[in-house]
Length: 201
Image (cartoon, rainbow, N blue to C red):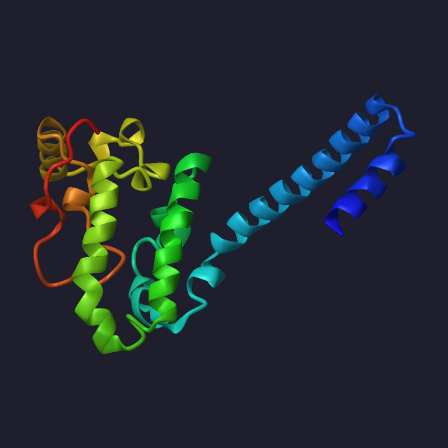
């Protein structure tokens, strides 16, 4: 049956010039490609919204509840960070890699790995260390989406902050080594500064 269908298709298209067929195929490919690209772009944008991130109770009742009222949620300047600002890269390549990794997180949510407060707390350190490790590997890339060293005014920092920043830079530390537990409850156990150093960031 498949051979007959192919023969019929060849017979029908045989009356058209190869150039016309190529143009039609190219146009169809262009429209299909544009549709896939638009759909992918819309999907990436939707999965970066705060509403998507807190769509499951595991996130809404735990980390989002902890985030509310922190300096990243509400502050004197009115600049607010959402989940994706801190947890999703802006560049398309790293963003796509992060989205693929996130599918495993969805699997954990579907299977009920952290569906109760007790289970969430049991895995809190493991989840935090995964984020800290990623941030150390990228030199706290997501922090730098908003905070840049060049834009920091030393004059507006206390002498203690200036000294600590200078020491951190000299020792090859990154933002997350010192600035953690500021948007979410800090887990019991070792912090990011106790994780292995990342070479050649």
